[in-house]
Image (tube, rainbow, N blue to C red):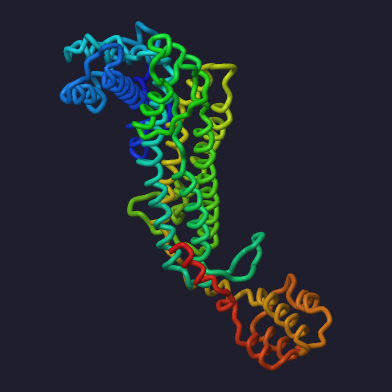
Length: 459
């Protein structure tokens, strides 16, 4: 017995609630709505210039035309499907849809200005620029911002919470949990600034980017100027030099930056996962939830693991998009057409990861007692402080020690020592009394430098 039609991708199945907002823009329907918008705006632009003797449209007619895009819904989706079944061409189907609506609006006299002097890619590149911009700025970036804000909140909350650092996985100079989280905030905000400065480029210059058809129709007009005005009126950046396609370099830049953000987030996930493994963070139980099908005690860090997997999938797709889209054979091939249909999938996996990260960060609490115990169990990390102070004392002429690093290495390397051992060692050092007093007063939990105040850089 065969199943009824099922979603092939989990983004359209079990994860749909977390990513459905992207479908407003990056679905086939979202793209077609944008295509209708571009076709309508080009028609309004031409009639507004009384091109070929056309009369300027009235305000009411312009509102009616723009309503075609703003009200785009299931009837238009169904009609386009029927048209494309005949035309076997998605953009031509959109053109016919607009023509049909012109007839119903009593505007058949300007029907021939629909898709005038435009190649399909003129419509598509504008439509993709519009939908990608809205998806990134209206859906993906707000989700990333929520994660950053939660990280910022916890960075401030834990700014002064001492924590044993673990360079190479080994006990190292202490830091604070707040400062470590602030590092991720700072990294992500740099990338956000770069993504926010993205130029969404578009062209509208005909079959091979030469305005040949435009000039054939009317050589007296400044077609590059008209094209630039039209593109910028949609809030996009005009690209004057293209082949049949807009070169997609801006897309490659954008996807590389989003992939970079993904990888920083992946690093965050692996760090939080490790802190949970160490017991630094405790996971807050969810009533009724199951951690393991056989081990009832477990609360698995599945949100961070799920996020890792989805960030990897997203980055792989974004890398492929970046690499493929910058190349087109001679003046045009269709590799970009198939590739761009997966932009929503790439951003969807990243959006799903952001949802999991935010949920994961909201389900952990810091185990301050364990952090304190961990520090108290690793007094040997003060060896760095001691040998650094001895070096200063030698330079100041208050010590005759010849190799302070070797001295501390012999005392601490690969060994567990306690406070009493260090106090005895420091008391016997050939250094000034003030330096001895400073070192004897030092503990692993106070040896955090200015870690706490470094959090101010994200405020």
